[in-house]
Amino acid sequence: MRPLLFGVLGCSLVLSVQALYSSSDDVVELTPSNFNREVIQSDSLWLVEFYAPWCGHCQSLAPEWKKAATALKGIVKIGAVDADQHKSLGGQYGVRGFPTIKIFGGNKNKPDEYQGGRTSQAIVDGAMNALRALVKDRLSGKSGGSGYNKQVGEASGGGSKKDVVELTDDNFDKMVLESDDVWLVEFFAPWCGHCKNLEPEWAAAATDVKEQTKGRVRLGAVDATVHQVVSSRYGIRGFPTIKIFKKGEEPEDYQGGRSRKDIVERALDLFSDNAPPPELLEILNEDVLKKTCEDSQLCIIAVLPHILDTGASGRNGYLEVMMKMAEKYKKKMWGWLWTEAGAQMDLEASLGIGGFGYPAMAAINARKMKFALLRGSFSDTGIHEFLRELSVGRGSTATLGGGAMPKIHAVEPWDGKDGQVSGKITLPLFLSTDNFGKMLYMLIQSYFVKLIVAMVVLFP
Image 1 (cartoon, rainbow, N blue to C red):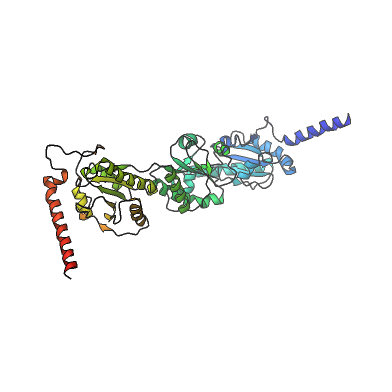
Image 2: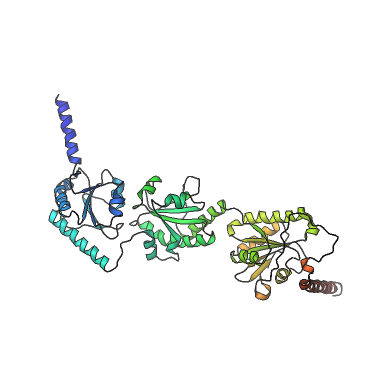
C-alpha cells in the first residue's frame, strides 16, 4: 500500500510542478501550433515568458506573471511558453536560460529582451513603457513589418526585392507546388546571421535568374518563424535552408554555394535540365526575325539551299542538325531561325553571304548589331566549334550591313514537301524585280574576285 501511496503523491507533485499556468489564468499558453496566429500575426503588444516547469525562478515568477496578466487584460497580451517542452520555439528566439521574457512589439520577428524587475508592478510598468513606444512609432509612421522584402530592401547587392517571391503558409501550395516552374526556396529566420548574409546574394541572384530563364526558374523565401506550417512540413531545422521544388517531384536540398554566382549557375542548370529545346522558326516575316533576335542574346540563322537543290530529305537533314545544336545549347537561351536561299536577299547581303555557298550560318547580336559567320562545315562538329567559340567570347565578328536589321520579305511557309517545277515559269522571290539586280551584281562581283585571285596565283 505504501509504494502505491508514494506513487500517487509523486504523480501529483509532478503535475503540480508542470501546471504553472491554467486556462483559468489570464496568461495565454503558447505553443508552436498557436504562436504564429496569436503573437506574430497579432497587432497587439505581447510580453512572452519562456519557462521550464522545473525552474525555481520560473515557479517564483508565476504568481507575479499572473497578476500582471490580469492587470493588463485588454491592454497588453501576456503569454507563456513551456520552452522545456517546446524547445524548437525557444530556440527560434535564442532562449538560453529560464525564465526569459521577450517583448513582441511592432516588429514581431525581432522581439526585445525585457530587462525589468520580476514583480507584477515592474512587469506592468515595463509593458506600459513598451506600449507607449509602440504607439509613438505608429504616430511617426514607422512600420513594424518584418518580412523578407523589408530585409532585402535594407540590404545591397544589385538585386531587386520584388524578384524574390515572399511565400507564406497560405500561398505556398498554389505558387510553388502547383506551378510548372522550378523553384528555389529559402527558409529563413530574421534573427539568423547566416540568413542576413545570404539576403543580398539571394536578391541579386533572383533578378539574374528571372531575366536569364524568362521567369521559368523562380526564387522564393519563407520566414520560417512566421509560417511554421509549411516549414514543419519540410522538416526545417536550421537556417537558412534552401530547397529545390519541381512539379510532381519530391523537393531536394540545395547543396551549392551561397554566392550570387553559385545560385545563378545552379538555377540555370535546373532550367537546362527541365526546359524544352528552343523552337526552330522559319523566317516568314519581319516580326519573326525581330522578336526572336531582340529577345535573345544571340540569334542563330541558317540559310539553307533551295528546296529544288536538296529536296525534303536534304532540307530535313540540315534542320535536324540545327535542332540537335539548339538542344545542346538551350541553356544559352538563344533564338534559332532558318530561311531558304534567295528568300531573304537583304538579310543575306547584310551578312555578306552573297547568294552562294549554301548552307550558311550566322550568329547575330541584335543589341550590338554584330554578327559572326560559320567558317567550318555545316555539321554537328562544325557548328559546335563555331558556337563554342562564340559562347566564350572568341571568334571573328563584323558589323551588320547598314548597322541595322535588314528588310524582311513576307513569304509562305515551307509545306514540308519536295519542290516541284510547274509548267508555268515563275520567278522565285530572289529573282523578283526588287532583288534580281542585287543578286546579279553579287554574282558578277564574286566572279571578278575569283578571276583576280586566279590571275595572281598563275601570274605572280
